[in-house]
Length: 142
Image (cartoon, rainbow, N blue to C red):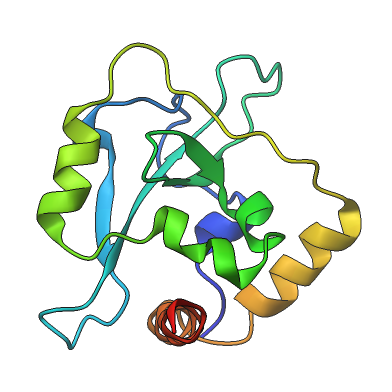
């Protein structure tokens, strides 16, 4: 079991820009076996001003901005709360407030950040990676 293919931009789906359309999003529970598990909202897409249309995975933040998964991985665990929703209702409320072009939280990412992210992402199954993320989220939350 390797890393999810989306991490390395190997896409079976056609390239499309990031949108604020709920139909383009996935709500993913951090622990699929727990009915009360917190969740994240994810979407694959490219930033409209990217001349190469590079597909990336984005998380929706509570403030309605999107953040690239690699950039997100560079932030301290204390900022994990920005992308985790405690209930589906909270996630849908944020999604329903979005309009116009997606707003993206741009953060500088180095080649070392990308390599560190790839190493973490290839260290387990997607389910295990989300459970590990949930553990770090709960530890940071206190």
